[in-house]
Amino acid sequence: MMSIKAESITLRYGAETIVEKMDLAVDKADIVSIIGPNGSGKSTVLKALGRLLKPAGGIVFLDGKDIQTEKTGRVAQKLAILPQTAVVPGDMTVYDLVCYGRMPYQKFFAPKSEEDLSRIEMAIGATGMAEMKFRRMDTLSGGERQRAWLSLAIAQNPKILLLDEPTTFLDIHHQLEIMKLISHLHRKLSITVIMVLHDLNHAARFSNRIIAVKKGAVMIDGGIGEVFREEILGALYNVKTQIIKIRQNGEEHLYCLADDVCEGGPHERA
Image 1: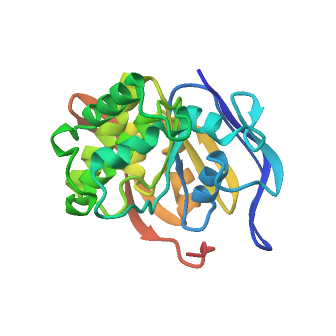
Image 2: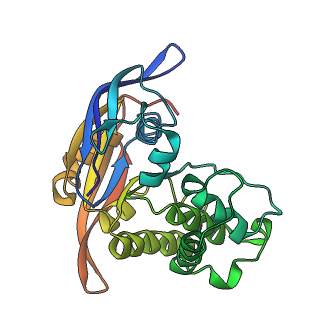
């Protein structure tokens, strides 16, 4: 099992401090969701874990080594990150996109190896994109494009997968499709998934652990039952909530209903 750990990290954009001296560690092959209000630092933390943002202080350790001192190719063999707004030329095919997932394993100008070709086909098949692999990206629906990006990430053969709002802009059908696919890939490939989510009920249903972040600090970090409590979510989002239990496909899940906004409380910036 590969671990990732943030030790006393401070994250800034210019002169503005977003996160200050945060500690966070994931050392089990779980699905971990990071939740919190807009502007709380969720995506910023994910960028630091994925080496897209260098901490102003503290260290992110990947498999016990400072991620900033590791070679880019080595990091990409261990960790894949899908940002919220991934962009690709519209005329690129799904297959061509997924091929980029093998770049960390290839030498310059070298042809794809048998292992590369096998891994590409496996990744495309694992995400249900086999029949669309020669389709152009600009002909795909939002859900299909997200599956294509997941194929790219899986082709890297990572031990850790970081996802920033993987269901953004998707309708409810495609949201559930993507969340169930992420859960399936986690179980089948034994990979750690760390994702930023706005949908609390997706987080409760599909995660093993939730990290609640507010104003650049970890408010609570624990199992679903520890975090999914009315007083916790109420204080996190400044809303009145009800937590109920529902059964879905024979399994019991906690479900959050937001009743009302708490008047006069602090508001996060957008």
